[in-house]
Length: 293
Image (cartoon, rainbow, N blue to C red; front, side, top):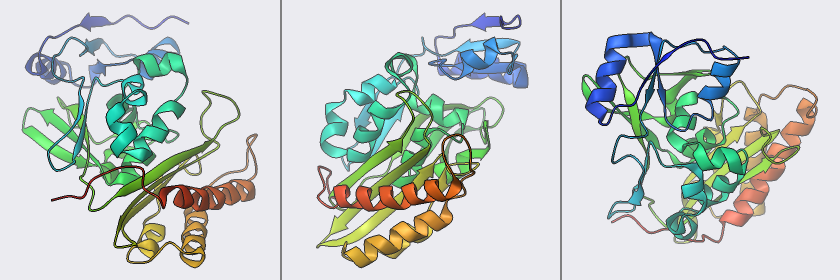
């Protein structure tokens, strides 16, 4: 099927892009990597009157750390840039482990992290990663710049809280409070498939105890699930068999899977618990990070 007819604009500044969005309202869609939007256009699940291609806007392709260790990922930073990043490999183990598991190499070459977050697919891997890390998205619009916590970005499947005329320009991961560990574990039927179960584990330690933790789930509910109870059960404690089992059990309880061709609900809950245990074991010996000043 061919997309319905649309106009195309390629602004060369954020101001120009925002003006187009304000002028055309809901009839306009932003195009960055296009790996989520283009398939929707071809199936006519989306039919915007105007595509606003921001790939020519300068200053959005970065991923970098501030002096305190805060990580910033620009709206045009592609999955493959993160997959190959020496910075992530040394200081952001959760993100480094997730990047090679995003879709397939073709999608990773064009798709973007920020675009994936804004697409708000409940099967999206990056959303769970940002939830576990306590991150947020920076949006710029007619009223200026504002911060949208990862917990508030998605309002439902394929729906986000961006306001008319706003563009998400950056995803931000806060500076760690201690040495950082973490990993992303994903069960998929084949490479590039959506997760049957995905678990993001983020861990920061201080003096042998957990200073900050985050656990988020993919594919086992109508949205990405931040398991606050499991993370809170770990903070202030050493990683022991008892504390890990408690966190794994709480994560399995928080999952809301449905039985389908990928497996039964009971099986998926079992995988969640197994992945949390495995993720915490791998995260116990942090592979990088820095303490915040």
